[in-house]
Length: 263
Image (cartoon, rainbow, N blue to C red; front, side, top):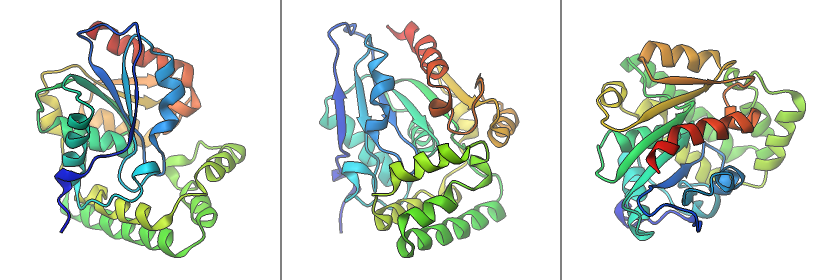
């Protein structure tokens, strides 16, 4: 039996000479199919902070790590922060990374100073929705295990949540992700299915730290979700679900505006 608390997620620690001594480290959590290095260009535009770019289980240099549920992912994240000697930090999470970040924040950890979420779902409201999502994610997991990666990625990026992608944009994402191993991705998809995630809305409303929810203006599903959940939303112009990729300049501007008061 492998204890989740022993997991150390791979990360890239970016320190800057201009970092204020009391400012928190920005810890970046990518979405499903991503990896920490994809945040490097964004982090480089915020030299006033130090950064930790994390590879989640099943992804990137953490592909060999397998976890069972959100509590295990959170234990791995906490172990990783301890490994890098990070006691004061803020989380930036996109999609799956946003759900991991919200779960972590809902445990009210002492060192967390702020929370920025991009397109992360705080949870499903009914048992029927949760069961349906678990079943849907299980079907996708089987495809990731059985089908050639380019084939399953073509289908993945044609889901309604990615409707704003043009054919060239979809092709770029498929090309970027095609070298990954489907088995660990499938395991992570099942382990962190939205159907297995607690509904976190009430905990998020009681956070005593700065919290902002970024959403692309063309991401109709998550715009509606943010409104229904009464999240503190800010909109990224000209963007869909993957707002930081669609409008990177405004994304960085929003991140800087939100975190600058922490310096």
